[in-house]
Length: 212
Image: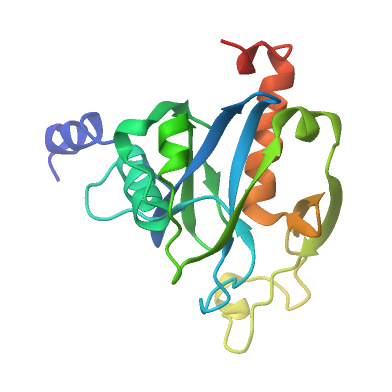
């Protein structure tokens, strides 16, 4: 092994999520209205095999060397037909390292009035869209629920090889689930976590982040 080659590899490499099986990106779309800034959400089509009928942001799996920004814009076009030139990207929010070994990049952006007017949902992916005022999200904290995640080793785990007892005390994990009720719908899961993170950034800025 040549240390110089290894050092060069690390120098030009962007660290990622170890053992990640996929990289995903979503656009977190903001829309300006007379009432104030709003967040645009989707409801997934009931025809989809995964998470049908759930609230989400436009997004999907990153392809090849695609950047999170490019992926978010491409998926938004495919799902909502909003042209890229009508979306102003503001930056990346905190990424999510999911327990299912994938990484998710939320990209905050502003959809202008013309982009919203030409929006047309893909019936195979999107059941409907809706808007929620940021002021409402900031003034109505989510309901929060938590549950434990306990390791289950299954048959054949090499306790003897590792020199540990079968009643080994594994470190448990946990999950916190924020839920934003909205007119008969629920904004929750990863979408709820991203929403909560966005709200926390706005509140940290004293609300100035949503005023131009």
